[in-house]
Length: 94
Picture 1 (cartoon, rainbow, N blue to C red):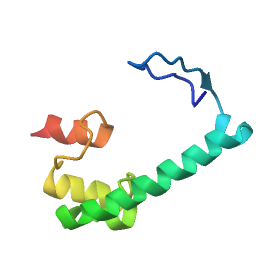
Picture 2: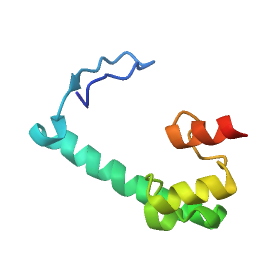
Picture 3: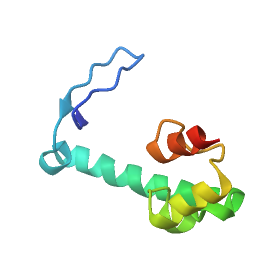
Picture 4: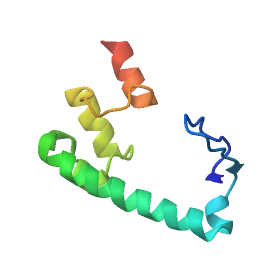
């Protein structure tokens, strides 16, 4: 089961099923969510050493005011997802 409205398309021979608010109802989904967030936060802290101008160690990549300001000041870096609204709007201006 996957927390959310959409199930990812997997290349493996596994099936997945979306479960809205699954993290509130299934302990293993909740645990996986916590592990993913902690891991992502650690990765973002490490990436701050490569891209200190973005302050990833503070906002962990979430679209905080400071992150949006840094994005508009410096433009997107290699790790920014091009599909997010702030990055798309920045690219449209250039």
